[in-house]
Image (cartoon, rainbow, N blue to C red; front, side):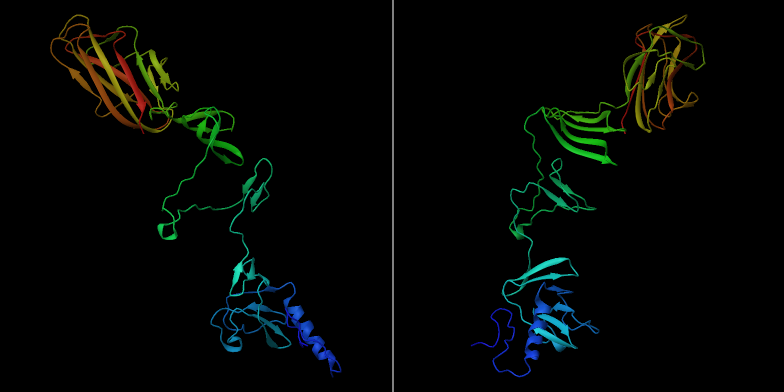
Length: 358
């Protein structure tokens, strides 16, 4: 008959044994150390300097001192001495320092995290998932990285999202305080869209890409083309604002036709151009000049031009073009004048255009 139990090697009290309490207490000591096993650490290779009664450790590989030869065993400090508890296959231990549950597989202590999770209805990371959000994560960082070739992967990484039909929605919702501020994806069609919102209810498309052609559109880009619908008289050597008072198009209302000028809705780099058509007043020798002016007073560098010599009325034209960095609220207007003799800037064909390019 064996003098110890099969699994935990607890000593039996034998018949006619003297001092039975010693054997009984030894068995209780081992039980107290192993039942509901929780260790403080699993990496130490030497005993800590000031253990507390009941402290338990999984001894690290290469143990020394009182733990020499105890690699992967459970060390229990009890009654002023270290007690060695050799693990058996299937033992489970909670590692307090890591918040990790381990199982001894006969050769090493391994984690109990499953290698596969299939057909789960709910999964919450750091929070509780629900029917509306069956996968829910509350994190401060997340990382997706490719499985390398050395690990048997391809080195590539694709994150795939799919919707059932073109008319459905597919995308990313970006929020602040759970109020949606931006949408990125395919919404109501297969066109790629980037839309933004101030209040989570009204959205503006900042970018739209046609999935059939790849053509990119910026629907909210400030841009205009405007013209004057009457002949604008200008005296000799007197710079005069040309009354550009009608628009062919005026996205975002950036051109103020009432004040005959463009008003920058946001800061940025803008491209402008103009066409001025000469109409004679008294002499075809009038020398037509034009320029673009910032905030009503400053000539924009590179925007000034002149046509000299004898002109053909309503045939001679001058074209201007320049790029300028504007602040929000800056204005740009078209001005013209004549040298040698006065004249007119012809209706309908004298125009001014511009758009934001950066």
